[in-house]
Image 1 (cartoon, one colour):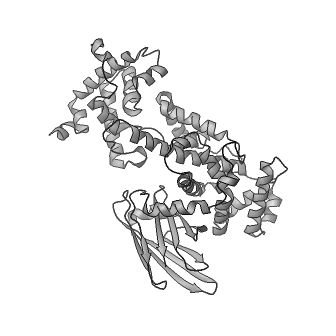
Image 2 (spheres, rainbow over the protein chains, first blue to last red):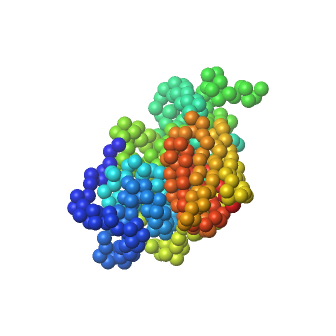
Amino acid sequence: MQFPFRASVSSQGVRKLSLNSWPVDDIAEHCRQHIQKYRHRLNHDLSYCLELFRRAFEERSEEAFRLLYQTYIGLIYHWVYNHPYFSSLEMPADYYVADCMSHFFLSVQGIFKHFESVPDLLKYWQKCVNSIVLNESRKKQVSAMPIEKIEKYPEKVDLDERLMQTAIWQRIKDLLPEDKDRLLAHLIFVQSLTPKQIVEHYLAIWPQTNDVRVDRQRITRHLSSDSELRQLLRIDEKQE
Amino acid sequence: MANELLYESETPDEMTQLLQSRLYRWDCPSPDTLGNYHLNIVQLNEREMIEVHLTHCLLCRQELEVLTTFLSLETFAPTKTVDPDTKAPSAQNLWNTLLAGVSAIHRGRLQTAVTRGDSSAPVRLIFEPGDLAEPVELFLDTEKQLDGYQLAAQLVLSEQLESLFTNALVEIWQTESLISIVFVDEDGVFYCHLNYLSPLLIRITTQNRMVLSCHVEF
């Protein structure tokens, strides 16, 4: 794995050594104070917060984890509320905040040494918040699709289903040797885009929605006539 | 044919619906993988695969744009719409949501595990998450100590599930507060110190982010 963050904190080594002996409650209190200073654009020192992260992830201190949770939960709420997709979700923020906390704590285990600073850690945490919100958004998009039955959500598919999806897509590619047709198949079957959306992004290939519809009908007719694909999709079994 | 298509409904035909139901975003990287790609913390071969995918996936490109916008939010800075100081002061806000999640919000079709019992007797809880082929048993016991109680817990797991639960994150809540965060060890065991006995909410998040939560009344 490649990390863009620098390797270690040599310039703060002396401070880190001295903070090692501090009680974790004091570290957390100083961390909170310096976060307030940061927010008010005053001189601040985030090494206390870095030490709190270190106690949690390097020493696996239960108390440090609990204090991290308490210290940063307000920020996580702030990020969830301000995520561009949050307003379109159905559950209250608390529901996602809990997952954002656990997802971050689990993800950073084992890779903490690669983070050089508190801003690096917070950027990663923010990425975790984005992942939780977008996962929910993807699920919501699936449930809103005009399809009678969505069999599986991609995040939850098991190996058998993944193999079947690979086989289905490979068969589609075999049946559609032209790049243009493969692209349209992906836009329609995998991304579920409408003709209008496709025209908006691929005007040079499909100038009008009717061009998309014509090609779509041609390829679906071609795919429908293939017995191997029908077998993979169990179309005939369902009809019986 | 063109005239016929002019009047065609936007409702997809049966074949399209069937393929969409099987293939919807099947090859899209997860939001987390896309995020790692954005932060440049993916393997080189994975990076190349994502870049190829992005050339034709409008949805993933859109999600990357959302991520970029979102990451530009200034760290710690309150916005005009939400001030974290007033909106979400502490972990206490989560208690009711998590408690509701035990019985009302079915996450992976978990069964609610609520028990009442003698504090000196081990408690056995059974989870039946929909994603797993077999149930997961959790045994809880408390032992009186000079300064309170020690909660000892063990998940009874098959060999197949051991790797899923080793290093799982355990949040232990009591009286509307988070009192401890611990990890499940390789034997499926975790401990927690309790100052007193009162209802607990235990939330276990596995390595694949499956959540098991239970409410234990002593």
